[in-house]
Each structure stands twice: as C-alpha cells, then as structure tokens.
Length: 113
Length: 138
Image 1 (cartoon, rainbow over the protein chains, first blue to last red):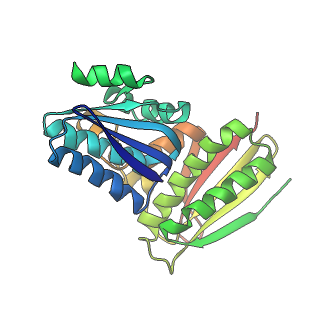
Image 2: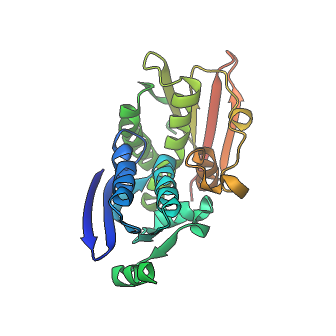
C-alpha cells in the first residue's frame, strides 16, 4: 500500500493505492488522519481510485478516520471508490456513513458546503 | 476434479499475500470467473485472518490451513485453525447495526458471508474450528 498527501486550499487530500489490508501499513493511514486533524485540517478527501484491494481492516481504518475527523468537527468524503469497494460499503452499510464522489472538484465543493 | 489442494502457513499477517495468491490461482484453475476472483479472495482472506487472529492468536507456531476442492459446479474452501472458538458466538456483535455501525472492527464474517453467499462454521472431529466457504461456478 502507498499513501500520499496533498493540500488543496483548506482541504487535505489523502490518496491511497495498492492493497489496503490488514497489517502494519494501516497504522500509517490512521496516523495520516490524526496528523491532518492535529494540523487543523477539517476537510478531508480520501482518494481510493488506485486501491486494488481492501479488506475489513482497511474499512475499519476508514471508519476510524471518519470518527477522528467528525469528532474534531470536520468532514471526510470518499473519492473514486471502485466498484468492488463500493460493494463493500453496501455490504457493511457504511454507504450510509460515507459520502462518495467520482469527481474531485465536486468532492472538494461538497467539503466546502 | 482438483481435490485436496492444501496450503498451510504460520499465523502471521505477512503470510496473507501468499494465501491470496494461492486462493486466486486455485480459483482460476477451478473455473472461477476472472472478475469474481477478487471477491473470492477477499471472502476467503477474511476467514483466514479471523482464524489466525481468534483461533491461533497470531502465534506463528500455530498453522492456518486452507484446503480447496474443485467439485461439480462449485469450489469449496476449508479454513482450519488450531483453536476451538465458535465465530458466531465469540464474534457476536454485528457491526452494521445501530451504534455498532461505526465500530472499526468485526466486519470480516459479514463481508465473507455476503460475497460468498455460503459460509459455515463447525468443529473438526479433533475439536478445532473450521470455516467452509462454497463458491458457485457459473
């Protein structure tokens, strides 16, 4: 798994790629959410467009990130969830928790709203 | 028919990718459609990780075994750990319901059951936990 970060105005974009699965790499993702909030970012966009594989632990880290951001009074949205990941969101009912977008501009606008 | 194809690995998360390659290779050889292989491997891997974690307590000295049988119209995966736990009892909470929707763990069996449609748990004659996942061939 790889993780990269980019600042877009007042929003933090966290891009994940590869396999987001159980293992030490996931701690990096958790830390990225905490670090963003600690650095006063309250608008977080998580880009999953290059994620090839995600398991329940990967979902758990997204939930944890959502909770971290929400508790700080912010908002997190998901960008480019693949068909398989979207299916996992539906199975686990997380589709009712995560706002998902396929267009970055639209996602960033939603975060501003 | 391919029967009794077996992989045994230490209970170590670093082995998960090895198991994934095994599951997808055997699934492909058994006739699982290419665009179903990811869902199949996600489902099996959830059960494998549960066995490593809850059955074997992530003890590398304790093996996790996956046995595959390609049968008419289906592929059967049996995942055996060395514990005697009962997933439906021991993992009783149901994330996805009520306040547990935002629990950051415990979705593995839910995902496996939804992707594979057929997942059962029982004990082997030796009293060890065994998960069976049936993947239909279309």
